[in-house]
Image (cartoon, rainbow, N blue to C red):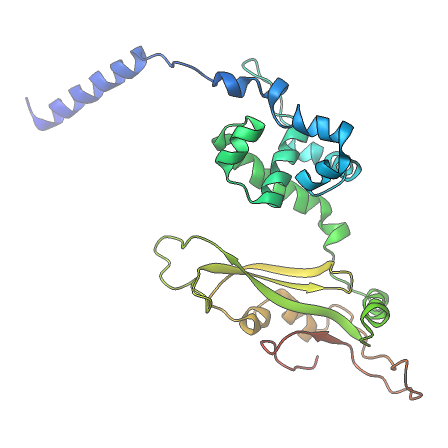
Length: 271
């Protein structure tokens, strides 16, 4: 018998064996009791009814804020029930995602808490994060693009920080990650870890006005800024930043430009 014939015969036998095998269980028994004993059905419900402060510590928001957020993202994360099983509800999906973001718990830890299998959680978390971003970006992550909006930011800095004509505070943050395969030193940063950079411009209330995330960790904050869309928008004057405003504590009407404040990683540069 030739080599090809032997391989073909072996494949046929293996396929027959697979057909005869019967799966021992579709869902582990303790996971199947998610609807009765999972953290969403039991613990969070108890905290909601008896201890709202602990509820807030668990998901980092009040019950009212949770339900407000749930109404917004539910249409994007709701799944249909099937003949085999009921779908995980939008409320459960949102709760497990918020817990992951708040605590940094591993998927295995969340599996035992919420009684949702790890492969399912690994799908839920990215889907819910994308739904949160697309649903909230217009209201909570909108870059100012008019004189009135930039002046409002500057007024808040003047009132809360006594810093005049400030259009935002900017800085970068290294998000540590496991080194990607075959990446060499691409994400290796000056702190001796592998990371990607989150760079943000915030107002006087610590609210994000702009973010850029994903640049590899070996790039400095100045390099990240130089290549981000915010830098290009400022240079091309498409954000309608005011040319200047007079300082409140002087009698002069001289127009002083608005500035973004940061550390020495960012260049002193006019727009």
